[in-house]
Length: 135
Image (cartoon, rainbow, N blue to C red):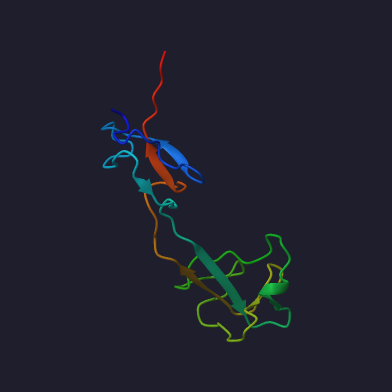
């Protein structure tokens, strides 16, 4: 029997995922077992740019365009005009940022990266279900 209890499970609010039954796509799942939702493993990266200049603008006021300096490391980082950008981080709550047009000012960048977390796939909460097709 496909359903030994002769009773179909309550599927309200559940996504149905076809039972693997040894195929290897969703290995180790038993029939009618629930599976929690998950996101595929990934990380997030964020970089903050700062400098000492009369033309600084707070990060929160930065226009949504590609005007920020492109620095990927705080080790021996150089700005586009060749100025050493490794030792000039300023400490205020606005994360002051320089735009591309400001030249000859010391600048720096700092970044953060989250740990890689997640599962092998992105999926909603689901139940392993045996599809029965009669032809």
